[in-house]
Amino acid sequence: MADSLPILPGSTVVVRDATSIYNGYQGFVQRLSGNRAAVLFEGGNWDKLVTMPLSILEQA
Image (cartoon, rainbow, N blue to C red; front, side, top):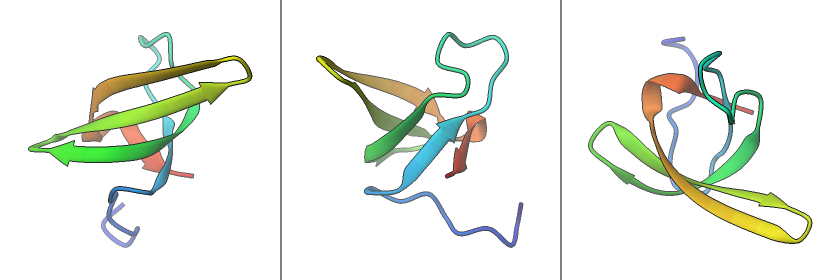
């Protein structure tokens, strides 16, 4: 994955972690702090902001 673009605020990402309830969800990176990202998930009538490790996120 060294040739992929870095994950930055505003990036669209997909969660890739089989143990996470968010596995497969697509969201938008709101901010970064260390090796974690705050990802905004929107789904019709709900929005959820979740902090996740960058290691389980990939660019969409």
